[in-house]
Length: 172
Image (cartoon, helix red, strand yellow):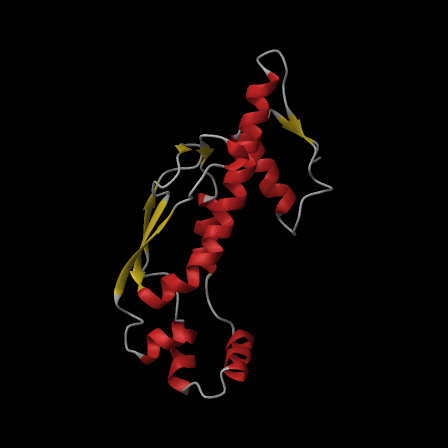
């Protein structure tokens, strides 16, 4: 899509994307929004390496060298993000994050950002529901280190379980 937008000379047109969800997880009525730190980190580090660019050129053999150069210089410095903060209640169909910036870049950012906020919000919401179900006399501790997915899954899940109301972790 980014290549098509670049070819059509629309890649740098200003666009606005909103991240939202259509229904709350676990058949619930709310979500606790989370993932802002991960989005900030991802956007601050977003850059195509030379290895990435070689790969893209190999799978788009007809792509002009100017497109690859455009990707080479792409970063998130022209993207403005606003939205709600970690730990805030969120409801279906309301904007969580609003991103304004170059159209093609926002298309490239959309899926990773949704992944980052969806996982964090899911864990945080689930933790909140467990804390509510446990009641005031029971504290919740997360033990997800050995079962979490991905290299940062355990730390991310621990962080957002704490935000959702858990009081401790097995990560020692």
